[in-house]
Image (tube, one colour):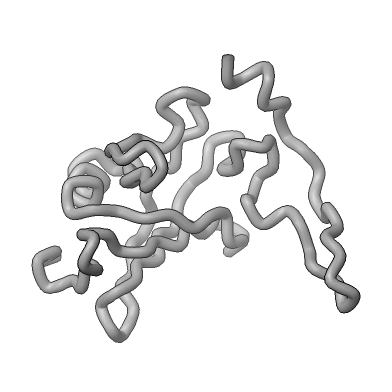
Length: 125
């Protein structure tokens, strides 16, 4: 894939949606720069660019909850990626399989709709 054809924003980042390869659950949303995408393609393990830490990071580098790439898709505008992965343990740093573990109801209240699969304080020391 010619990654130079992709439309990275002015900040050099492209949004990425991560989806479970087997059950199609949306796991998370993050961003990549060209280096993160190159590393992802080279290693088969998802890498991102952290906007808050302003650095490259490998998903699971602390927790061990890596994302092994199964397929990568590019949207019609070539400005968003969808990566289907085999997720080890969980994707959310709060202990849930998906970062989308809360549902907003009609009254505007958040309700947790998933069960934790690990305890963050035991993983992130």
